[in-house]
Image (cartoon, rainbow, N blue to C red; front, top):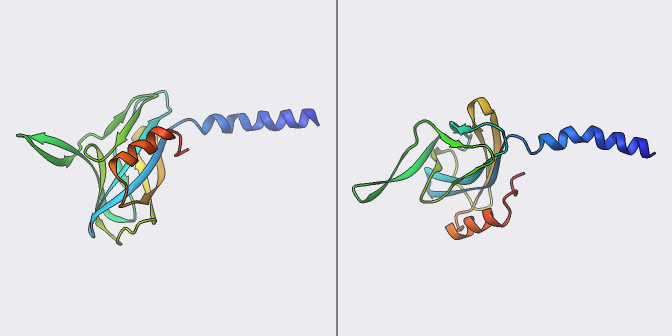
Length: 157
């Protein structure tokens, strides 16, 4: 019996190791600013040994998804597309947060209702793709999002 238990544990070790490799998507949520546009916020966490760059995002919830950021131009904050993707170094995180980098959903196929969720496919190029579920939370404050990310940095695993 002891040998069987040890064999079972040994067989599962490679699976446990894989569970922590790759890119992790933490605390994904989406807000809708109007019936045609939404924004996704989340944390990217790189568990690989190489840098990974988020190049694009797709979802059936919108006609297109774009990587955006806020930039100050002549003393005015403006939103613009990110060219070249969002890099995440090995062992590091990158927050896509309100007032900074985020994913814009343009041409929503349905209204985003609180509590609903949508599936996102994040393309990291040579680092592969990852799917994530983003919950619609139009009531979440920026402070709530930061607190959730800090309270459980492994919530998306």
